[in-house]
Each structure stands twice: as C-alpha cells, then as structure tokens.
Amino acid sequence: MSKAPKISPQDQAHILSEALPHMQQYDDEIVVVKYGGHAMGDEETARRFARDIVLLEQTAINPVVVHGGGPQIGDMLKKLGIKSEFAGGLRITDEKTIEIVEMVLAGSINKQIVGYVNAAGGKAIGLCGKDGNMVLAKKLTRTVVDPGSNIEKVVDLGFVGEPDTVNTMILDQVIGRELIPVLAPVAASADGGTFNVNADTFAGAIAGALKAKRLLLLTDVPGVLDKDKNLIPDLTVAQVRNLIADGTITGGMIPKVETCIYALEQGVEGVVILDGKVPHAVLLELLTDHGAGTLIHF
Image 1 (cartoon, rainbow, N blue to C red):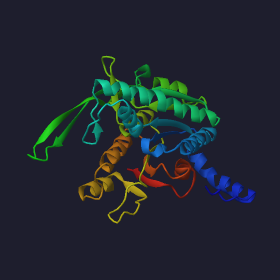
Image 2 (image 1 turned 45 degrees about the vertical axis):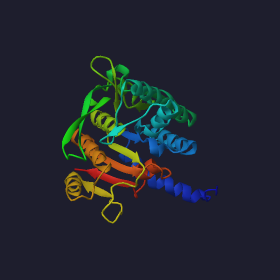
Image 3 (image 1 turned 120 degrees about the vertical axis):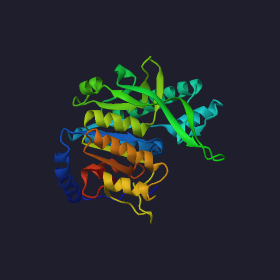
Image 4 (image 1 turned 90 degrees about the vertical axis):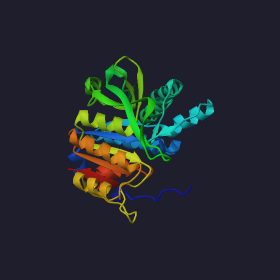
C-alpha cells in the first residue's frame, strides 16, 4: 500500500484556513450522517470515518450518526442458515429474522462504531429507536407487480416498519454535550415490539425531527447521475421530480431521493447523497468548496 504524499506545513495551514468559513457556517448546527452498510467497508475505512466524525464534533458541529448494516445482517443470516427474501428492495423480516436484525444492528455494528469513535478521541453513545421511544414505527406495506399476471399485489414484509413519530427528548439531552449519538435503525412498535426500519428512512426522520442543517446519505455511488452517468452536483426538489418522471433517476435511487424530499419538507436545510467509500467524504462535503456528491434542496 502506497503512503499518502507528505503535505508541507504551509499547505496544511492553508487547508485549515480555507476550512474556516465552512466551520463557521456549521457552527453549533446539527448534521445527521447516514453511514451505509456498503459504505462501511473494511476496518481502516471505518476508523477513518470515525476520526472524521470526531473532527466535526471538535469543530463545534453536532454530528448524529445513523448506521445501516444490510450486508452484515445478510452474512449473519447465512451463517445461521436463515434464508432471506426481498420484496420491493426491502428484506422480508419474519420473527426469526427480526431477532438477528436487532442483534446485529443495535448490538455488534452499533458498538463497533461506538468503539471506533471513542478510540479516535470522541465520546460516542450507542442508541436505537427503541430507547426512550425515540422512534415509534408502524408496519410498512409494499405493493409489487407480479411479473406473470402484471397484477399489483400487497406483500407482507413482516416486522418491517416506517417511522410514525420521533421523540427527540434523549437526543436533546445528548447533543451539544460533547457526546456523539450513534443510532441503529431499530424502532419500537406501539405495543413494545420491534420493527426493522430502512436506514435512509430512519435517518431522514431523525434529521427532520432535529431540524438538522444537513443530512448526508453515504452510499456506494457518487450521487445522482445524469443519463451519461455524470454526477449532478446540485438539484432542486422540482428538478429531482422531473428526473424521476423522465427515467433519469431509477431503481434504488428513487427511495433515496424520496427520503431527501421528505427530510427537506420536515425542515432540513439540505440533503447530500455521496459516496461513502471516498476517503474523508464527509469532510470534503462540509468543510471544502468542492463538495463530494449531489446536494438536494428547495
């Protein structure tokens, strides 16, 4: 592995100086970062992400991390011999599966990220939507088109939910006190049960409830691409809707941009879809002139 080129002290000072106006823009603001399962990558990538999050907190920005874990859940289900099925891009989550989902998301992945943040000098606190009834969810229904008959049918996704209410009481106690919340997208049902919630959707609901300055959705693509596969750096909500209508935005990017629009409607100032595998993507987006993905805003 090649070493990173050395930067002169003068260049280092210049970089820090250039970051100042961006730090001032986000001073004491809340930034919600959705850290996806694919974007997590290897241990080195995860530790680098943790250092970047600690740096944000040290510059008086209030980061809130929401993490996914689809690949890790899939690996654990495979180890245990539990077959996983999907419908409409979402995992059908039966009673056996929800136990594994909760164990992996709110347990091993959550505490691993907390550990990395703490090792980087931060003070992370691991939570999930069930803690203090932070996120109450309702059962999510999906319709899919049967390829044989071309008829729409409702699919029972089991213990898959969508946020119904968000109570920020716990987060209000944590944010601004040098603590970094790390949230697993596991939510409570009204009867005390458990729902698996899509991490993008969960992050959008949290960002909206907190009226965050930014919501960053770290994924495994550069952002929203045009028909020639070039990155579109800036989009309004109206432009996003036009790109869906003309077929430019398709597949899994549609629910992502729908989450962006929902978050904006709830009071988030701007949402960015960016490639989490790019080193220091969060810092590039927030603290430089260049940005690192697609900014969506009104």
